[in-house]
Image (cartoon, rainbow, N blue to C red; front, side, top):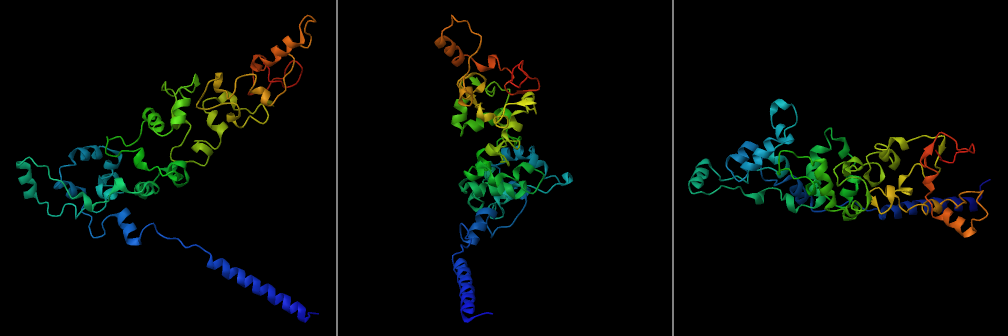
Length: 342
């Protein structure tokens, strides 16, 4: 039967639960915009008092952008301006915001008058979105308005990628007005990456390195610059799957595999470059001795061979001289065991 004490204990427990819930709610943080909502909208969308007038009307009175227009018309996005393309329209105002205030007062007569005087008529840039001075995340958001809604799947991981986290914007790598080709070519991408990744650039100058400077491989062969589900923005799910794209003979599975290191090539290799042969982190045999004990090279050594000489041979000879199939093999050694020998 319930006693008065039991009722008091139950009431006390209920009261503690209620107080805990209330105190937790009081401590919840509310989301706050970076700027007042109207200013934030203006920063991303453009002047809220302006109207969209279309690219032709924007450029009709402003000849400062003639060359840019030629580049844009020949670009991938410029092609979308054609209604027959069947794609969503992309124009100057998609990025720069509504342009009615920018060309306000620029009549055809004024343009002709200025042209006779040798003056190139320019619009009022201050009424447009100040793209260059936007925060990096806001710059990328201008691009992501379209590029996360189309078939560019590799951009779906952008917000969690290292570039976005470190406030690198799309503008740092892509110059939409530089030429008709909006993409960065593989050859140019490596030099572009080196502008920030100085350590990697140095590693590719070491004696043993992947032939990136020779133009045979590129950063984008291994890394997805727009972010991925793997560490280091690798284009595959893990390190080994990325490496075996070019090194299929190391894929396996093997009957006799190199245990513990088979799935992570970084255990033995430095991917960008090394002072040791074969991109090894440490030269042989010291790399192997980190996990394996040294052993005599010939158990039936001549009695004339001193112990110190035999020890030196064991310690300073490359392990792969004998264990040549170090990544794995399906063939046993002479002893009948898997010794990774050929």
